[in-house]
Image (cartoon, rainbow, N blue to C red):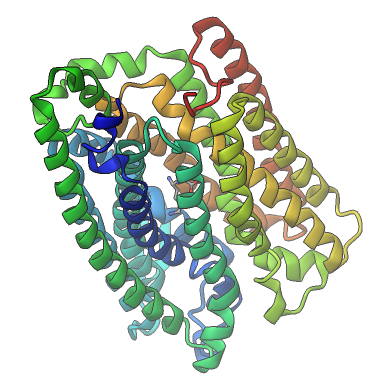
Length: 465
Ligand SMILES: C[C@H](NC(=O)[C@@H](N)CCCCN)C(=O)O
C-alpha cells in the first residue's frame, strides 16, 4: 500500500495542492470578471452625456442575465460536459479559457465603443437595448460559456487529484479563492472606475489582463495534468493498482458512453442537487448583481461604500467554505449543512424584504449571515456530487447541474431587473429571493430523505480512515 502511495503524482501532497492553486487562480480571474460590473450599475444608468452608458435597470438586468443565455438556450453547457468527458481536461480547459478571453474582449468593446444613440432592436418580440448593452451582453454571454465550462473542468480536475484525500477541503478552497475574485470585483470595481474618471471600461480592462494571466496559468496546469496521467499509466501494469486507477483517472475516451447518461438522469439524488443548486444560487448570484444599489436605496449607504457591504458575502466565504469543507471531510453531515445554509438564505431575504432596521450596520450583519449560508451550501454540495455519480460521468453531471443553475442565472436577473423597475422599494424582488430560499429548504429536506433511502453517503465523512 505504501509503495502504491508513491506511484501516482496525485498522492504527493505538494503536487496536488500546487495543481489546485494553479487552476483555482484561473477560476478566480473568471469570477472577478463575472462580477466586475455588478457595482457599476450606478455609473451605467447615468446618461451618455454625463459619462454613463444610459442603461435602464431593465437593460442592466438583461446584461446581468446574459451570462447564462448561450449556455441555456444553445445548450452549450450541456455539450461542454460531454466535450469534457470525451476530449479530456486539457483540451476542454484551454477551449474554455479561450472563450472567456474572447468574451471579455467583446464586452470591453461594448462598454468603451462609441455607439452614439444606436439601439439593437428586435421589433417582432418588442425587444430593444442600447447598442453598448447589446454588444456587452453578447461578450458576457460568450464569456459565460467559457467560465461555466472552465468551472466544470476545474471541478473534475479537483476530483481527479483529491479523491480519497481532502476532496471537500480542496473544493472549498477553490470556491473560496473564486469568491476572492468576486469580492475583489465588488469592492474594487467602482473605486477603480472612479479613479479613471468614472470610466466603466477601466475595471473591465483590468479584468481582461488578469484573465489572460489566468489562461496562462491553466496552460501551466496542463503540464501537471500530463504528468499525472503518465504516472497513472506507468502504474497501470501492476495488478494491485488496477482498481485504484479506475477510480482516480477516467480520462480515456473509451470509458464514456452516451448511454451512460441515463444513469445520471434516473438518479433522484442528482435531481435534488440540481434543483437545490438552481434555487440556492438563484437567491445569491443574481442578488449580488442588485445588492449594491439596494444598499444605497434602502440602507442609506454612500455610493462609494455600497459595493463593500455585499462584498462581505464572498469575503466571509473565504475562510468559511474551506472550514465547512474540512468539517464535511472529517465529520460528514453534508446534507444537513445544505439544509442549514438554505434556511439561512430564506431568513436573510425575508429580513431584506420587510425593511426592518434600515441602517448600514444592520445590512452588514445580514450580509455576514448570507456569507455563512453561501459557505455552507457550496462546501457540501459540490463534493457530494462524486458520491452520487461515478467519475467517468462527472463532467457531464457537473455540466447538467451548472446548466440548470444557469437557467436561474440567466432568467432571474432579467426578471428582477424588470421587477425593480416596477417596484424600486425592493420589497417584491426580495420576497422573490426569499421564495427561492424557502423552496431550497424543502429540496434539502427531500435530499436528506433520498440519501437515507439510497445510501449515497452524503452524511458520511469523505476522508477514509
Ligand atoms: C463552484 C460554484 N460554481 C458555480 O456555481 C458556477 N456555475 C457559477 C459561477 C458563477 C460565477 N462565474 C460556486 O461558485 O459555488
